[in-house]
Length: 226
Ligand code: ARG
Image (cartoon, rainbow, N blue to C red; front, side, top):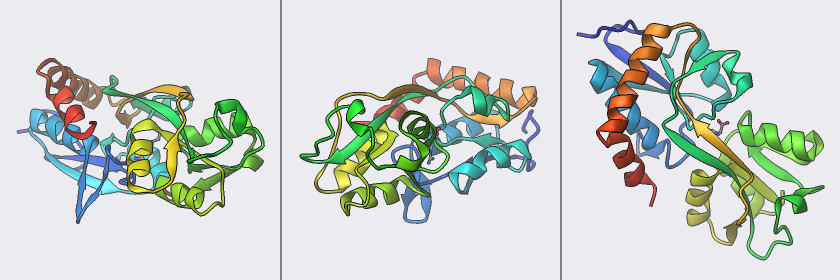
């Protein structure tokens, strides 16, 4: 018996982009990761079933805005610009935009990226910052972070800017890459909720608070982040 109204009766619908380990990725046909586990824990608290909809990263906000999805949960960074379109819950994790280069690259610091070709996932904060700081003409947008990493490996681009945890996951599974020591930008991750839907926002924040206090969130983070 759910107390909060959702897009589909009895169901919490989560919009995500499952190309972003360890937050969300495919294991066989299942979407697994930190966000999937957290959404499941929130749904349990609210007496709802969880349904995950996988889509392009830049469709998540629209899905939430239109009410097709209840929750955008995708390692999504809270930004002022996104706040014009959606509300954000309390933050459940932090991220750091990081720079991946080839081992032995001449790029050793953020400054060295000037004039270099930088790959990013389309519409992510890495995309936005890279264009702002290094010029649109130097930024190559890919649908998936993994595609940017492949382009780096094959020498089409010189660096990838992406969140630190997926960066670690990609570097681990790809030979010849390294992450720069210097952090680029620090961020807070939160769930996006339809603007003005305070019932749902309060319900999810209430669930998140309990899950933080009883250690569940930390346990989920520790399970995926080694
Ligand atoms: N944190 C970055 C952002 O909010 C990247 C998130 C990408 N997430 C994903 N599931 N592909 O823009």
